[in-house]
Length: 169
Image (cartoon, rainbow, N blue to C red; front, top):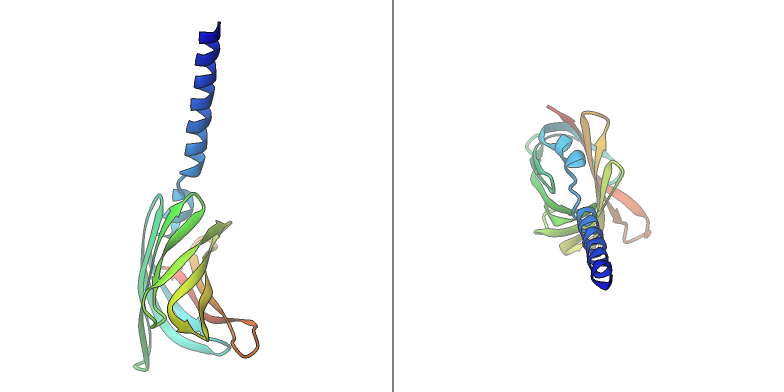
């Protein structure tokens, strides 16, 4: 009887471990896969004014990763390469971002609904510190929005420092 009880307990514990490991390592493919492909946009918001630019991005995804590579240009005045590489573990994301001109920034955060909300740790000070926020958001069936929010060092208020609205090509 004790042997049967031990076997039953072992099976129960093994089942719980398998279920919990499955939950922890659940993939994000249903969320990430629709973000794959070619994207373009016409507008970036930097602080309050709108700057007309052309952006094009290529996005590659797996069940647990997202890689965005793109370029935004405005006539001859402005041209910037932008990239983000994210890895997902469940709904938690970590990775890197290049595009602010400060070197490679670290990203970390979680997905909530149709948005990945990330903290940014810049490589150098930007607006008086090394922290900001980034959101990568699905917008409808064929849109994606990349938004960066920082703290204004003078007022302490959150301000949108860039917003790129993209549509699937």
